[in-house]
Image (cartoon, rainbow, N blue to C red; front, side):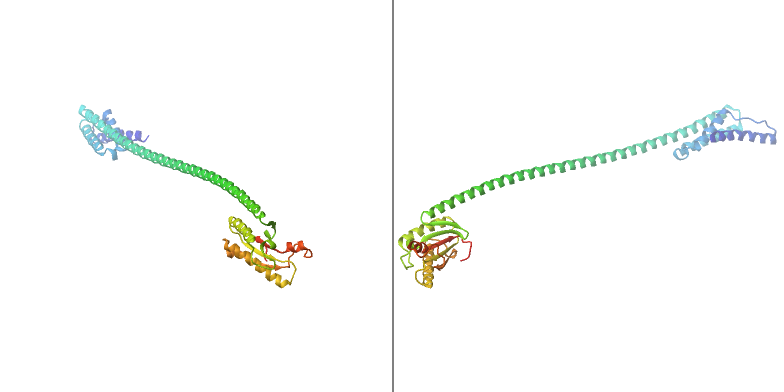
Length: 316
């Protein structure tokens, strides 16, 4: 609408000029040829569009061409030269407009290409980041699987070792029981053996160990003690408490002294055949702990004894 108003304004300008000139000089008014009208309109359109900043040189050329056409129209309104110059002016204006359009298109193309490159680069960067993130996730999952597999393998190994240790412990326990039973059987061949709360008690008859009223070991006593020592050493030389006992014949104090002396004799012999002295203690109870009635010879014989307590659990 604005372009049409502009075109009408351009058309009215020469008419008004001729009217004024006619009134002043008496000449007749002449309308501009259509080539000039179109040239004016083309230049007006070009000068109001992007040509002013994108194709200023071409627009100036169009302006000069239009000025020459206007000058020719003022001199010879109906001459062919006027129409030719107007046509040229119209072409120049259109060329300026086309050059501006081409320049704008090239700029738009450059902007589009730049935007495309930037978008492509962003997409590439995003794809690269996504790929890197995916690779990192895959690596984390691989490491987690490897760690889980190691943990499973280690757990299986630990289970196998625990089962092996359990079997070895069970075998060791059975072997220890076998050795202990064998040792107990061996001890029972040379002495009376009994398991009590105070420990394993090995009882040796005083008549076998000592002469009446004496504390020196008899030869047969040493043989029996040697067998007992061998068995005890096979058991790791456990702690021992040697207790001497007598019957009630004679004074209690004398019997206690004799019982302790006999216990010490047994200790010395056991040490001499390899048992550790620091694991052996002695005590003499005399007639204080009888196991039979002292009124009979048989009872007194049973009370005259030496007891070796293995791994004693109670105090003397």
